[in-house]
Amino acid sequence: MHKLSLKIFLLLLLALCSCRPTGAKELPIYNPSDFNPKLVDQSLHHKIENHTVSDFRLINQNGEIITQEDYKDKVYVVDFFFTSCTSICPLMTNNLLRVQQALLKANDIMFLSVSVTPEIDSIPVLRKYATAKGIIDGKWHVTTGDKKHIYELARKSYFAVVEQGDGGLQDFIHTPNFILVDKKKQIRGIYDGTVATEIERLLKDLKSLMQ
Image 1 (cartoon, one colour):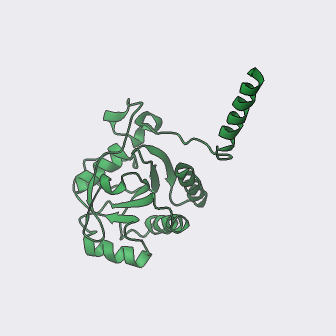
Image 2 (cartoon, rainbow, N blue to C red):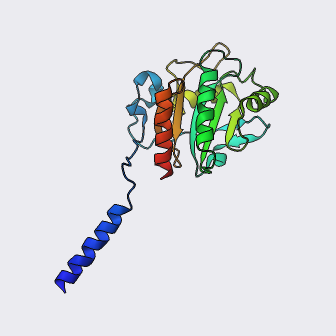
Image 3 (tube, one colour):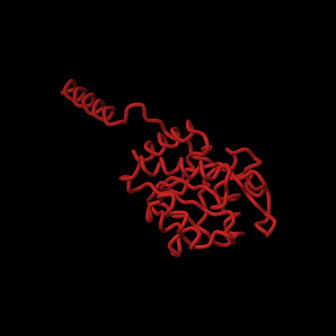
C-alpha cells in the first residue's frame, strides 16, 4: 500500500512539473522604491509594495472616453508621446506597431498612447495620426485629455519621466519609455522604445504574462 501511494505521488509530481512552461520566468513587480528615485515623485519614494497604476479618464482617437475599465483583465503597454514629434516618437510608434502586429490575435493584450501636448493633439489630429500609422481601433487607444491629469499619471503612476513639474503651461515631458502593466494594474517592466533589443525583450515579457 505504501509503495502504491509513493508511486501515485511521484506520478502527480511529474505531471505538475510537465505543465510548467519551459524556460518561463516570473517577471518582477515594480514598486516606487524599485525605480531610479529621479523617476518617482518625492511623495512616493518610500513606498515599497502594493503599487498599482491609478485610474484615468482620457479621450481616444474616436472621441470616446477611455478609463481603466477599458483595460480590465488586459495586459497593456503605455507610452507618452505627441503627434508632431519628429525625434523619438516616430521610431517608438513604429516599434509598437511591430508589437501590435506580432500579437494581433492576442485579445488580452492592448496598447495605450497618451499625448503630452493635449492642447494640440485634438481628436481629429489623433484620428488622422492613428489612421496614417495603422493603429487598430479597440486594441490601441491613442488619447488626449486634461494636461495636469496626464502629467500626474506619467510621474506618479507609471514613473515614465525624470523631470519634475506641475503639469502647467510651461511643463513638458518627453520620454522614450514603454511601461508594461499586468491585469492587476501592476507595473511589470519598463523598456526603451527606441532600441530594437528592448522591443524584443518587451515581446518576450508580454508572452510571459500571457502564460
